[in-house]
Image (tube, rainbow, N blue to C red; front, side):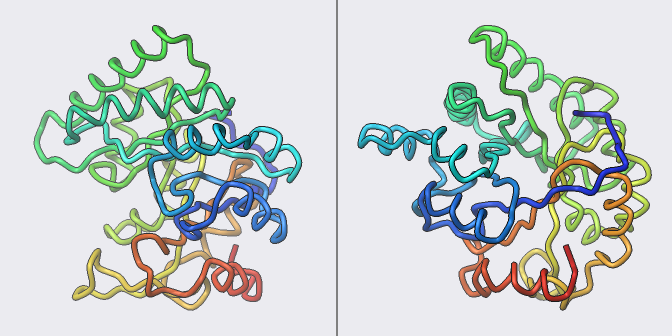
Length: 270
């Protein structure tokens, strides 16, 4: 539940960014084999067009809801490429397709990004976009809600809390690694925003100013991300899902998701 902090250890989840060539059945089986409770669907069968994937798969007889139940792995969200600000108008057609699909599959969240444009009106633009989403949701009577990921203008606790002040009805997906790369201690950020966090993304890296994005991704537990300080706090204070966002889709040179899971487990990292 948004806004709740319970003294229950968080659950673990994975994003299909880490295994982008797999189909839904294979993803759910992989998660079950590793004791993972939930998955975020970002790519399936090498495509991020999830509405198209499901349309084609269901036309051939796949029944995704039964697969999810059978493997005892929850589909936590459908993760779109859409952004609240700075995106193209065509993204709204994509977002509507994601919303319709998620609601039909009873997936509780559709993920969008905050956006990365600059200017004094950023938050106003984001709040206006949320109003547009609300109208879509009311029009089609969707139960699925919007999950906003902090991966642009919402780089620190101050910006996040200002945004949430005008967005009482959205879920927050906190990309803790992004916060860290932008120079704020994730423990400090958590203390400020924890009551509003629905889900958290984690990954490990080494700072590298010459690398794209300012870092080089490494196996969990071998980098500089302060999971040794953040993790114990989340274990005490967070009851949602903490997702290992292993970006194999965008960085095919990194090791496999299975290697990342093994590293995280062996080092007690996550």
